[in-house]
Amino acid sequence: MEVTGKVKVINPVQQISATFKKRELVVTTEEQYPQHIMIEFTQDKTDILNQFNIGDLVKVSINLRGREWVNPQGETKYFNSIQGWRIERVATETPAASAQGMPTMPPVDAFEPATNFNEEEHDDLPF
Image 1 (cartoon, helix red, strand yellow):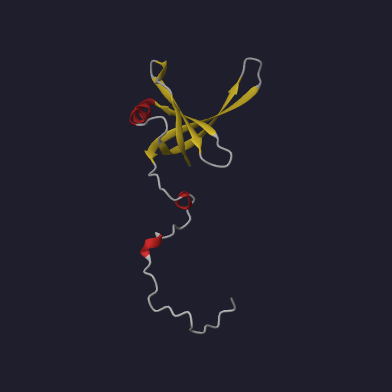
Image 2 (tube, rainbow, N blue to C red):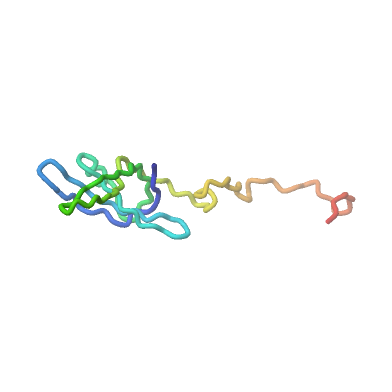
């Protein structure tokens, strides 16, 4: 799975235990209702965030993780996390249509003007 958006937050590395570290990234999606998605990078993947800055447009490859935990009272709880494993910059394209996967129009000056146009010629177009 992938999440695409602008980097909003890059937190410092957190050393959770002697053998486990993580780093959190928040990506804001660019859609009608933007979402702020917190993604965790763990262990050796924490270093790949060093080359990114707030405001960068990125595509993050993620895995959804879920776990079960039974509390001391015997109640079962479930937790989800989003774990990143790859991140790359997205090339920004000027036309908005390209970002939505629609074909782009060629520039206006890419067409040659008609030189054999005669207004007096009859055509059969109804308008």
